[in-house]
Length: 204
Image 1 (spheres, helix red, strand yellow):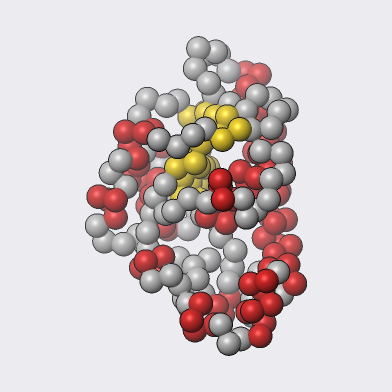
Image 2: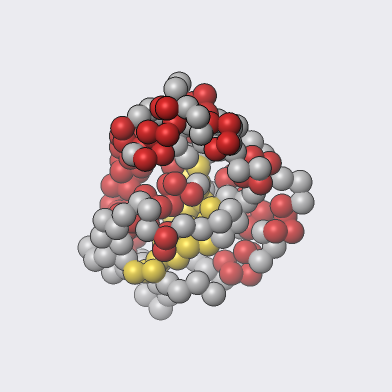
C-alpha cells in the first residue's frame, strides 16, 4: 500500500506566514505554475481512494494536479487544519506578546486559541478519520484485483493533518518529526503492508 500526501499550494496567508486554519482562502494567483511538477509525479498512478479536505485551497490543488480525480474524491471536513479562532490571519509578531499564545506555542495541548479548537478536538477528529482510513485500506488490499501495482491512496490536506496522519501510519511517531514536515505544494509518500508500520519513501 502506498500513501500519497499532498499539502495544498500557497495562499496569500501562507506567503505572509499568517495562521491559516478554517479560513477558506483560495490559492494564490499563478500557483498553477508552482504546482506544475506534481502532475508528472502522479501520472499513471492508480489511486484506489482519494481524500481531500473540503476547504477551497485543497480542492483547488487537487483540481490542478489530478483533475480527473476531483469528481470522485471524498471531501472530508475532518481533515481540515486546526481552527486557530481569533488567531487566524495573524502572524507570530502580532501574537508574541499574548500570554495565552506563548503558552500554546510551548504546549499546544495546554491552551485553546480564543474562539478556536483545542488540540484534543483536532487530534480526535483526525484520529476518527484515520480509523476509517485504515479500515478502508484493508478492504482495498483484500479486494485488489490488480496485484501487479501497489494499491495507492491519495490525501490532499494541510500541514498539521499530514504530520498527524503520517506519524500514525509510521507507528505513532511524534507530530513534530521533521520527516513529515512539507511545504505547500509538496508531496510526502509512505509505503506499508497490511497491519504494519509505514516507512517513508525518500523524496526525489
